[in-house]
Image (cartoon, rainbow, N blue to C red; front, side, top):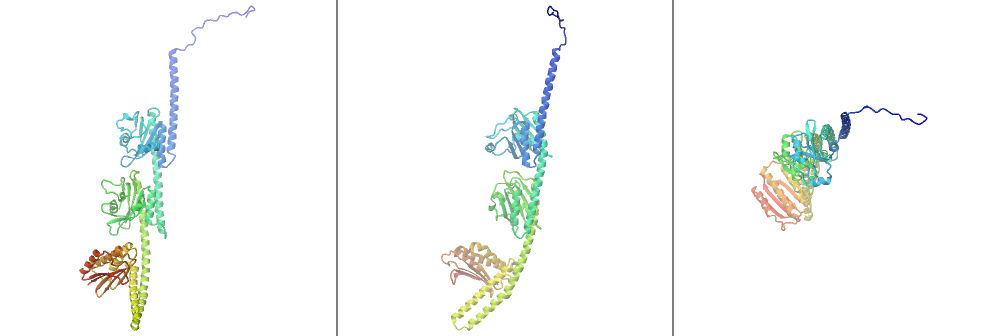
Length: 578
């Protein structure tokens, strides 16, 4: 710079310098954009993989099967960004046995009605277990529409769930928030389904082991209960344990009748069980008869099958899945345990049948031990009764005989006729008491004294049968050689006479007590039935008395119905027995 002021410096004009061609610049921009986009894709993929890992962690965090299934549906909806999800469990019949939903509230589900059975598009995955992805559900010809009140659904993804080598069920997803379910969504849900198969398998094994443990604990409890002197009835305990462990609606325990022609419901637990207890059903052409004949458990999914008769449980409930289990005795099965769920509930599996059959076998052994112990106790009781009966016969009756003979001798020596008559009446009272004691001896000794089909035994059975109708137990007395062998026809007529006479008392006499006296003397068999009722007034017994008279005349005998000496009525039936 000079003193005169600044000087202008002239710079040379710039030359071509560094310049970037336009075409390479565009390519670099595209490469950078692609790199950024790929990075975003990697980021999104990484995020979805994290979501998949979280979903797998969620479905493997619990071993309860119902919780696992619910977590599978919820995780699949999250992965595929689906509004609605469902999991259908395939049943033994090829339809959907269970149907879990996500996104549909309880009120809407109730308006829709029963869950689907696996038809149309839902059934396509059952018959051909491969993924189905649709932009619009209506694009597939197998779609049959929706029932009334069903929420609208458009995009769709269906993925099968494999547990080991079997198809356990299917995942159904609908209404992606992106408008359609993408290929990436399908890949993630398929990966989730593979992990879910392992989780479901583990949950099923855990559930089965817990169930097996409960069956074993129930068997031990029954055995322990039978060893105690008092407690719950064994058959009732078997039914109560079975309905709880099997998650059943009705359980019954049936035993066969002595003649083997029918079975009786001894115990029942559950829905309308009171209506079944004590019911009698024929064995012929019944599920119970089939199981008893074959000795093997039976599994039925719908209460009955076309090739089998309907279960007797259908008389009180709409029977669905059934397990009929034999209660095996020392020889042939003694009865059956029937476990039932109502129609529409999930079916029993072969594994359920095996575990329940093991329980029934253990229960059968326990019941056999209980019967053996009861038989032993009964034998001890009968021996004790036999001792008491011998004491009554050898001491009490002999003393009464001696007293009676003494009174009879005294009566012959008394000059006063009134006193003598009273003494003779006391002798008759002693004779009647002796006959009653003999009857009591017979009842105490039971089968130790006489065959079960003897006249005494059959008469006692008749009086026992008619006790509820009479409202009291009639007194029974025997005298004479009644244990001698009589013809079956005569024994039948004698028993019929006693039954008819007591039935007339129950129907017409309004009695508070009755007496049956059966005696044999001088080859004459006499049946006398007395009561303290209203007597012969308007009894309406003509048909019954005619029948009794005809039976007596068949044996050259007689029948008469007369007023009692102190009120009531006396029926006397006499025949010559040989």
